[in-house]
Length: 118
Image (tube, rainbow, N blue to C red; front, side):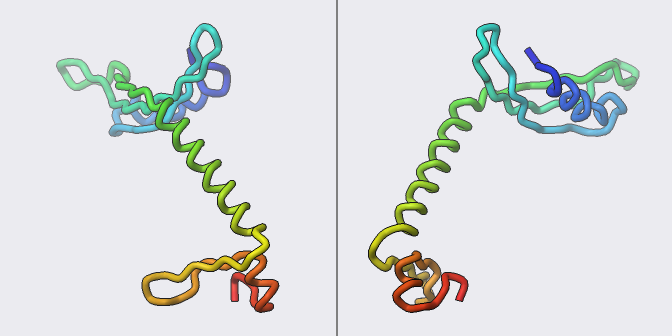
């Protein structure tokens, strides 16, 4: 079921389609009868009759809920690691393939008196 503001967003996304203009891809959160969120990747295009007149929109959805959950977990893990590195009581730095320092934690900045940006 599409709730509240999502109806507006869905209508806005499909508006060009009912005017016969192209194809759209967008993510659409839906909710099951028991309130569980399901994320869909929706591909929608204009639906036409035999004479080429626009008669509606047809869409094909792909459940991307699991992918979205994994992405969220990875993002949280990256934030946790960034916090760990930044607040470590030892200087931590990274060097890219060209030998340039590209990572610099707070302790490295404190010891050297150079900011991360410098």
